[in-house]
Image 1 (tube, rainbow, N blue to C red):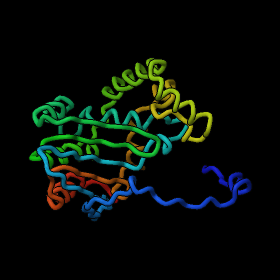
Image 2 (cartoon, rainbow, N blue to C red):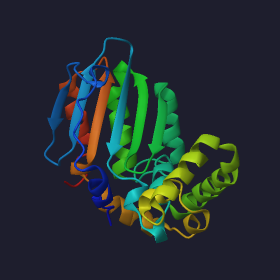
Image 3 (cartoon, helix red, strand yellow):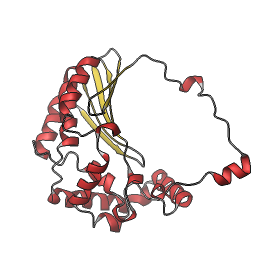
Length: 237
């Protein structure tokens, strides 16, 4: 279900498209390559000692249903809880040994996973990100622990003024549409979500044409492309 723009058209007519303001135009040189499975790989070389690799998936809370609200957030939280190749302690140890900083974010229309690391470890970072995205174990016992964490976050909502205000604004604007549902999901509903729902959501939304990998810092585009091609080879188009 999508919202109609008919009321706007009847009141204001077709609104003109505006020009992008100069400060917002992205004019710096960058490289972009599309892999055989549809993943777009972009890089921008910035001299320095560090690099950042981010994986952006075009799927968020708006791609859920009312009966599965919170699935995308739970899936993002499960990323470091173990894969078919490594345990959660091994993943944490690998990040620590690289001296890297892991960041993940869930939103209504995208989910991101990223690592900031030293420039010599970008290959390792891409390999780790590929592993947690393509080979997530989705262990039911770990999922129960994650649901407990999310429940505690729900309890703390009254202290998260900015986020809670924005969630209420979205609900009042969109109501039962998924754009109006909270990113972290409904507390009662998330407790009922199982590993199977997470797998179904992942299979429906985590595919090559829906993924962009971005690397910035002192990086080689060709090396980034080769590393992504290898680490994300199992991701379907």
